[in-house]
Figure 1 (tube, helix red, strand yellow):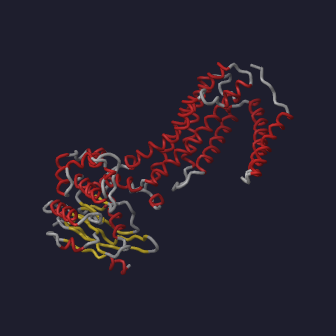
Figure 2 (tube, one colour):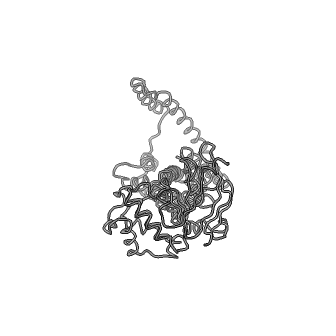
Figure 3 (tube, chains in turn yellow, purple):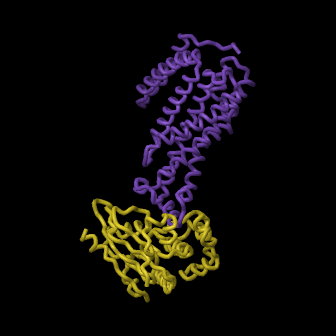
Length: 220
Length: 263
């Protein structure tokens, strides 16, 4: 039970004078679920944690190290953000899964494992044959699952997930949540998740902590 | 070489009739082009007449201490012009453009003037200024195209760039595919003109030399040198401008600057 990610007094102004102020902690082998009405800055908070947006104030620690001491590239391989809208590049599904492994920093640490990729795809109810399919022809739900598999293959220590089941039907949604549970259990990893359907998370067989961004919004 | 036919004042005035004719068509079709057309004609006449006198003066003096400041001034004007119409740029790219234009023009221009044409003295204004001017005109357009293309590509692909950053890409790795498109967009007009020269068009410089009485074979040699040097300086200028510019699209956290993220 170690603290993976800790953020203190993170604040940022965003659209139309709204602002967020949030503090929280992600413990290993658990999920931190961010709750809040739409427009309360849930996605903004995830993007700050991915270092895509700069906060106006506050500090973030990864395993006790202040984020300013960790180079951004290294940070993003450890704390990996998966956007709500799946981003798919030109080429086949296999090419999309391999794309991150063409980057220098990833090549230094891992190599692409086709067997693992196929296994993960099957776990989220996608056939192996999808690997040769042009990625641009995927449906929204298929693309979201491919993006999730691509993220898991990178073996980050923290996943920042923005509505990972938004594009999925109930079967695929259950399959994705099942895979995430398997990925998390006993792994010393953690997930920060924004979900439109908190009931999905309550059913999971793992500890879920809640961060209520709505109330944080009122306080600020 | 001295078989050129001079144009008298009367003949010069005759050419204006063509402009008036175009103006009449514009009035007839209500294109609203009469005023800009007349203004453009007057400006072109005044500017060219003045530059004719200025060049005559500079060619007579022919001092390196005068030629270099003039070329630098030309580079400055070209860089301002190249960046003036580029939209969506989150910072002022004029200095990057100035550096790219000046560096590429001086490297290529000096080789052409000093080594290939080799006039006496080596810095002859009569050779250097027109050659540098021709390079500058092309570099200016190419750099404007490259810059514009780079920003519009990245603006259109913010999500993809951020996704690559999330994978752990360096800023360069995140934008390299868009940078490549920007460089080729800048170079495309030059490459196209290399392909069709002599088949579709006779370039202005070659036409001018032939009209001035030079033999076509000799004019062709000059034209070839000019086109190759333009291609070289355009390539160098485009690569320099994108390398100098891409970093300015990222914060110190290696994230895209926010003005690029907003749609």
